Length: 349
Image (cartoon, rainbow, N blue to C red; front, side, top):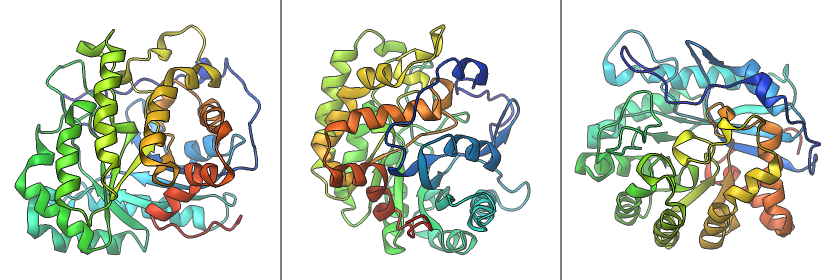
C-alpha cells in the first residue's frame, strides 16, 4: 500500500462508465491465462477475489491467472525486508480458495510473482527460500519497483522507486540468485529505461526476464504529441531486447495514464476496435520482434480497468490476433504464460 503522503497514480475505476459499452464475446471458447493482474484492498479501491472473478467470469474463457507484485497485504510487523512475505502468503491463500473449485473451474493466482528486495545481493537467498515456501508451490518469480522517470507527470507507482535500480551491482547479484532457484524476474520499466533492462538481460543470460506492459512506451508528460518519435525509439530497443532469448514480453498495460491514450477522458469508454486501432503498432512490433511463443497477453487489472472493461480488453486482443495461426493464438493467450510461469494445466483442459 501507499504510505503516508503517497497518493495512487492509478486511474479511478468507474463501473457505471464502463457499463456504457457492451460487446459480444469474440471466440468465447478460446482458453486464456491472464498473465498479469493485481489484488488489493486500499482506500477507495478494492479488488480482491470477488472482483477478479466478476471480471474473469464475464464471458471470456479465463482458465488461470498470474498474480503480480503490488505492495499488497504486507505484514504489519517484523523486519522490514520480510514484510513482503505477507503478500506471497495472501496471494497463495487466494489461490487456495480458487483451487477449492467452489468458485468455478478458474485457477486464480496459479502463479505468484512477489516482492523480494534484490538490493540484498547475494544475501537475498534465505528470504527467497522463505517466499518459495510461503507460496505453497506457486511462487514463480520476483518483481521490484523499477519504473522511474524524472518528469513528475510520469508516475505509475504509489510509492516512487529509486532511480537506476536495474543498473545497481547489488541488484544484479540478487537477480542472479533468482535463476539459481528457477525463478524469473518481472520488470516494469518505461521505454527510457530499456537500455538498463537490455544490459541486465545480457549480463544474466540464464535468468528469464519478463518485460511487463510492452516495455512502457510513454505518451504522457514530456512525451505527449511525440508518439511517432517514441514509437521509433521504443521499437528499436524492443528489437534489441528480442535478440536476448531469455527475455519474454507481456502484451498489455497500455491503458495506464502514462501511455497517454486518454481513453479515460472520453464520454463513452473505448470499444475493442478503438483499442486495437490505437495499440496495434505496439502489439505488432512486439510480436514481430519476439514471436508469439515469447509474448503473452495480460489484463493488468485493476490498473487498466480505469480506461477499459475486461470484456472489451480481451476482445481487442482477439481482434488483434485474428490473422494469427492456431498455434500462435494459443501461445499468445495461454501457452507462453503457462510455459514461462510453469503453470499446471487447468481442470477445464
